[in-house]
Image (cartoon, rainbow, N blue to C red; front, side, top):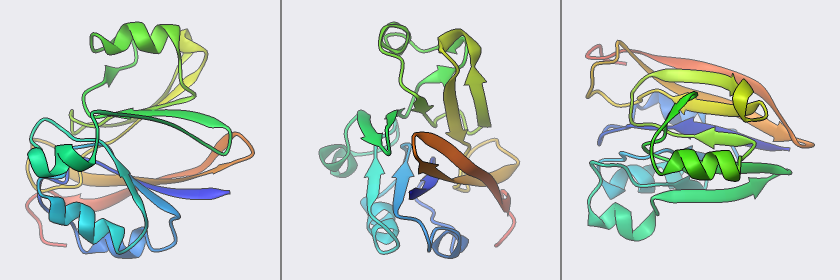
Amino acid sequence: MIKIGLISDTHNYLDPQIAEYFSDRDEIWHAGDFGEITIARDLEKIAPVIGVYGNIDGQDIRQEFPLHQRFEREGIDVWMTHIGGIPGRYCLPIREEIENNTPNLFICGHSHILKIARDQSLNKMLYMNPGAAGKHGFQVYRTVVRFAIHNQKIQDVEVINLGKIGVPA
């Protein structure tokens, strides 16, 4: 079993609660818009980080984290990117790849909208967007997600509300 902490859109702010919520995680997956490389370094103090760069990220992050990550964990084919769209309305050129080579789990960020859903049209692929953990954006609440993967199953999915945007932790 592997335990994952999923975060996105930190926009150069790492909530102090993250260290506690992700302290038992084996890996942290960041779906882009870190803001500064220091966010990645601070997350790495908690657990190894797998990430992708987002549209606001500079060259420091783009040199270390790619636009897309496609990898396998515990028999689950994972594809993570920053700008991916939503079930039924995936971004071009992602749509063609996702239809022709559907992962078990598709992760993206960018929208700042928390959404976890099965895409029934794509072989019940699980879609996850953890929302935004940073203080910039239009979202009302800052969120992250925790889950586990065991024996080719995603389980124990938990949404964590870090509080309202603009309200100190």
